[in-house]
Amino acid sequence: MNTIEAKGHEIVSEFSLFADWLEKYNYLIEMGKDLPMIDPKYKIKNNLITGCQSSVWLQAEYKDGRVWFTADSDAVITKGIVNLLIRVLSGNTPDEIINANLGFIDDIGLKEHLSPTRSNGLVSMIKQMKMYAIVFKTKYETKENQQ
Image: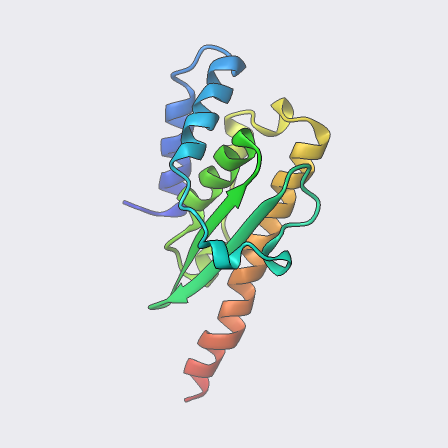
């Protein structure tokens, strides 16, 4: 099973292996190293997420009915956070992304261990990913249904 919910459960399970938040931050930093990197040509102002303490570029592509994300950031923890979101949301349909329950974020305690500005950045990243899904749904799936 490779649903958003299953991926969230997998992340909760992984984070439960760590005793404290220092270890969890280190794991986030390690996850940032595996971030699907954005093509440098997409590191433009239009792909910059507003509301983040650090710079985060997010790019989305619609292929075969699914949305694929790549990103980059100038902060190591932020790279890990955006990679968490990409890991869960990338490769899903626009509807799955729009309706995604991202309860795993609360389950691992991420929001409560981030600074208020990083927490706002997390919300902005989620909002932007869902906005991409809405745009792709409107642009491609509505067209497909009309034909």
